[in-house]
Image (cartoon, rainbow, N blue to C red; front, top):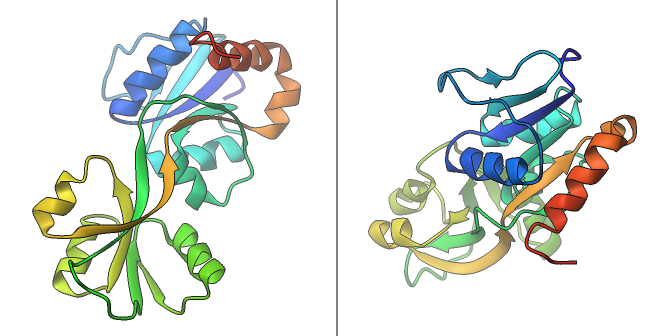
Amino acid sequence: MKRFALTIALPKGRMFQEAYEALRKAGLELPSIENERALLHGKEGGIALLELRNKDVPVYVDLGIAEVGVVGKDVLLDSGRDLFEPVDLGFGACRLSLIRRPGDTSPIRRIATKYPLFTTRLLKERGWVADVVELSGNIELAAVTGLADAVVDVVQTGATLRAAGLVEVEVLAHSTARLVVNRQALKLKRSLLKPLIAKLRNRDGGP
C-alpha cells in the first residue's frame, strides 16, 4: 500500500457514499468509483479507497494498512482498537440498545449481540452476570425465539423491532460516523492529515 499517497478505509453501503462525499468536500482528490465490484479504488501515487465490511475498518486502520477510516461509533465501541478519533461526521445516526420481549422482567441470563466486547464491558460495569452469545445476523430472532433473554443491537427507526414484537428497554449508546486515524500515520503524514481533520471539523462552519 506504500505506492499510494494516502489509503482510506471506508465501510460498504450507504455510509460509503456519505463518507466519500464528506471527504471530497474536504478537498481530497478521491478516485472515481469505476468498478462497483472492486474493493480497492485508486491510482498509484494518489489516494486509495478500501471498501470494507464495517467491522473491518478499525482493524485496517489500527494495523496501518490504511492511515484513515470512516466507521460508526457503535463499531468503535466494540473494536478494542486504539485509534485517534478526531471528528464526529454526524451522519449514520443510530443507537445501541437493550431489547426484550414486551413485559419481560425476568432476570437476564443470556444476551445475544453483534457487539460482544461492548456487551461484556456493560455487564461488568453493572455487575450483571449473564452469558454473551455473539451472532452475526437477525439478532432480534434470538429474543423472539427465546435463545436469549435480551439482545443488544443497533436501532435506527425502531421499525424492525416493532415488526418483531420487541421493545427497546434502554438506550446504551448513541452512534454516528467517525473519522479515525492511525496514530503513527498522524505523525508521519501530518501535512496531509492535519488539514483534512481541520476541514472536516469546520465543514458546517462550526468551531
